[in-house]
Length: 115
Length: 114
Image: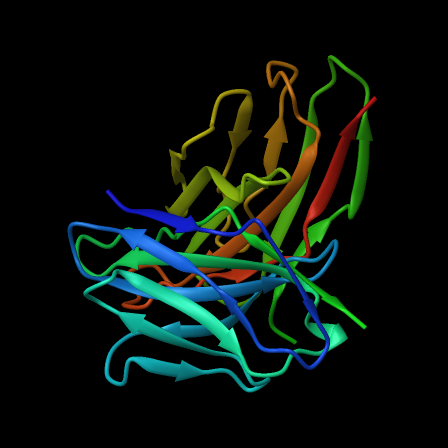
């Protein structure tokens, strides 16, 4: 079985400051890793994913995440945030083997960007 | 445009009534999912279906029912047996057997029990 822990429920930060949203997972098998973003009263949108290869993955809007196998982490970072980044962010995993198509989500982190 | 539609966006229900939430996708995805979202609890899986005419319970199926008569549609019924149905409901889909399992989400339905 897999589980995902997002260590911070809320992260307040000032505009143009850097931010890190933490995600740790537990799994007995290798996993694929995902970050989703949810703006208020909307569905989730995929932000980025780690499938294989380089452990550093980037999104088109400046976010990046690094897969650390030894620490079982997949933290999300952005060097300079904008007001428009205010949203809830979810980390998720999916097992590579015995795959049922299901995702296991963390509890979410609310990023609050202040002017 | 390909995507997932959910209707209605807002739904109000009196206690003791059943209500059905609609989810339709034109992505030609095999698998569909229903999640419930409550503040601070992330997304919890209610039911999922990997093929037409077949579905499985998720982690919190009690008080809910689904059907999958067509590939494009996966309606969710919230029954009167669901003790606390007020929540935001999200539908998702992906390719069954796909190696990456990226799920695509609809815009959600907010259900309020009066």
